[in-house]
Image 1 (cartoon, protein in one colour):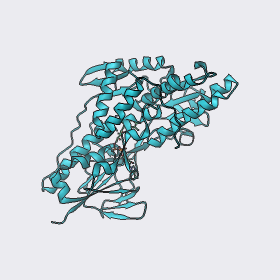
Image 2: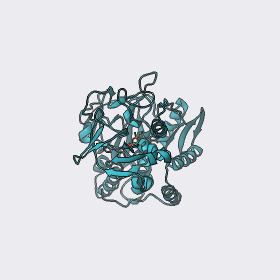
Image 3: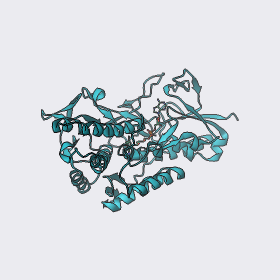
Image 4: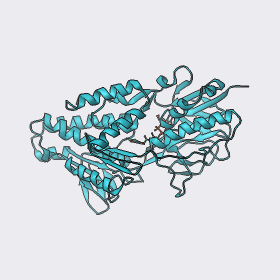
Length: 413
Ligand SMILES: Cc1cc2nc3c(=O)[nH]c(=O)nc-3n(C[C@H](O)[C@H](O)[C@H](O)COP(=O)(O)OP(=O)(O)OC[C@H]3O[C@@H](n4cnc5c(N)ncnc54)[C@H](O)[C@@H]3O)c2cc1C
């Protein structure tokens, strides 16, 4: 029997877990190619810690080749389009790859809901480059502000707005606040707390809406202790170079504006026609395959799974990881001539960090907050990062952080 060619698009949570969960028999029966525009897997849950300088960028990036070894081929290139009828993938270097089975898991991009000026003026927070840029910006503007005589000028420079109070917005804002108030402000004699403002803008009536109300109120109190001003029930209607316009008619000035309010799936450009899509997410069947196209699976943030409310599963690493593991099993079943099984998502719980020694957690109806939740958050994320080398690196740095301020070495972009 000819070897089947399995192509996996994206070496993120869904793509890599598909590969690592394939049984050896499948690896022997098939040729496997993984394509990613980056040469590393990015452990996004710890990205805010890179922006806040608790971790270094390389601590949360794992070379895809370290995972694949010699068993699978890795191509570092951008996927341009897929032709599911002819079963080919087109790469940016012009190469056309033929496949027998496809797993497409290219993740998501920032979504601005058409907000005027957002794409032009706001920083985004999806990649390692975004986290490094934010960290560098904080370090640079403190240096710049320290050279200014006028308090008004310093206040202008040291003003930050973060838009979006989901897990990413809240985790980034608390990390940045700790870098700023815990380390940077203590390095400069002429910068005082009154010179700095950090505002979190939230369109909902409470932060971290997916958590129980009591936990999200606890998170709100924690934000105010960290000197973060929270504006609930406010929608940003326009972003300008150094201000945001809000739906209550106000203009709020800030030198740094960060957008974390929305994501949309990477828009898979399909040469052969129309998939049913919503915000780029592709409607999949219950086994995560694409209707009418056999052996084609869409996973993770890209997939709109048929849930009762029609909104699909949350765009989280948990979902992507479970879908990868499930799809590996289905691929093994296909190669044995069996039918595929439907995917059933099992939520393991929710955790969000609120800075050092503080977090909230909700696992099987039990609520955790404060230092115990923070320790659990760290333990869970370390376990989920599938590399002993990285786990030890991260543990070492977290241990060092207990006794020292954050590292403000400025790295080149
Ligand atoms: C800052 C941040 C914090 C987060 N925190 C959490 C958390 O705490 N818990 C949680 O459950 N979820 C969290 N998430 C969400 C989680 O990261 C995503 O839901 C998850 O990564 C989705 O997995 P995926 O495999 O679909 O996509 P990804 O893991 O994003 O993988 C997609 C891969 O495709 C590659 N790629 C994209 N486009 C192309 C292209 N055209 N050609 C080639 N390669 C391409 C990318 O380089 C990437 O490696 C967070 C996300 C962010 C941004």
